[in-house]
Length: 586
Image 1 (cartoon, rainbow, N blue to C red):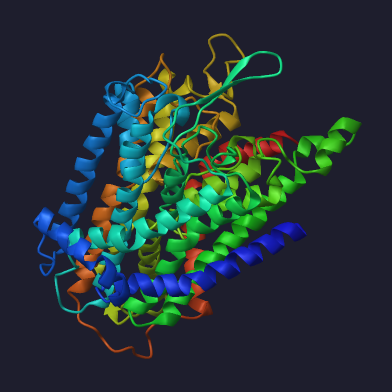
Image 2: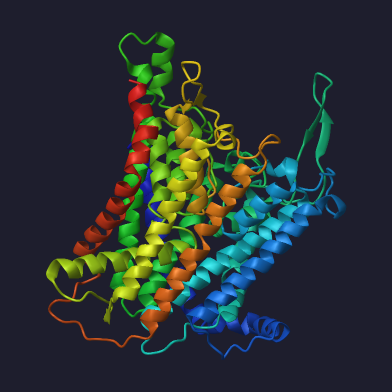
């Protein structure tokens, strides 16, 4: 890593650890109903919400009732978002008079934002009205984030509680997530962004004449309010097509750093929340250390590959122009305002978390540089991960790691005083296998069908007439990245794949939406089933054969399980994509 990248990483993770402590403890108090100071101010609003919704906050749910609430809320909000986009041409706050969003694109987008994926097969400023951006999309940024946070808290409760079937009340958790966490933080964050130059207006485009007499229009809108929850909620959907490379979404180096930091803020804090709720702070810090270690390794790898540049330009006989270009590393697709170091950290942060915001084009990375964010997603985005989703995904991996440790010593595995049984392992296995099945199956279907191949920008025709069509390895990477991003609820893209076109509006709209759905709700059901099973168990005192989950040995085992599971599953596909492309450049 370059000195700048080293300094950036040290500052970033140092501040992250410092902020995680107060925020994580605050989250623990909020979901335990012990946040006395903020409750004095907002308690009346909370109680009014319960009365209007007919919620009885003292009644708790078992895992099936909790799951029912998650599914019902997500379905209703998705239908509302779809309706707003389909009717936007007739609705107010549409100063550029954009037409209704086409049916399949609206379906894909509504599914994307409901699942916290925020995959965008459209240009935000040229497709969505102000009302659609604010009501259909920004609102979903809050809703999907809160759902993930609630599920993570329910799982932690299941681990912490003893001999009960109750995991809390989903509707109570949902209200508290919005009222005490997401909305206040987003308001403060949005005001900061406005102070730095991010625009926030309901006025239409700005028009003026250039020096050569041409009239130019600059599209604008309520950007700061969407940007705040987009980052805090690990959503990633940009108001503008250029996302966080656009100067009106990300105008300064300070906003760039704060945006990266805010993506990890709540996921990192949940490590502390875990330690507080299970009464084992050292375990929470061990989880934080695991996530940090994997993330730093990814930043180092990506920074190295991008700083090294294109191998083709370093071959003997490269001309002077190529040699000059090579001196600065691979700057293709990167904002000159930020450079390689800031772009490398941003790319790792956004793919470690299920965010998807980008300040550079991953399609323009070197082959092995592009492999890093792709693999980050394929690991399950458990390295901090999305708000809530990263924590419950990491807890699933912890169960697998503890189970393997138990097998190695020939004892029944235990986790925080609870024995891991076959039901827990089955649900954890389902959690890990479903995303791999989705990514590989949908990628294969896309490569085998004309509609799927038509969207690939980097494709090779058959060299001999009548011979089978075959893609360039980079084209394969584009498809593999797309379904990894959709299944992983990330939302970033290689950007070389045309996912929506007039010629083929259905294929990618449908398959990517299905991948988003599969990567979200079946996994939530598996997690809540684990939570319900763990809550019923009685606590057993630790014995001489108990595996400690708060030391370096645990961190090493957990890192190994995460990397091995991801590498063994996807290595063959990665070998045919970015790895082959890397050697083709030599």
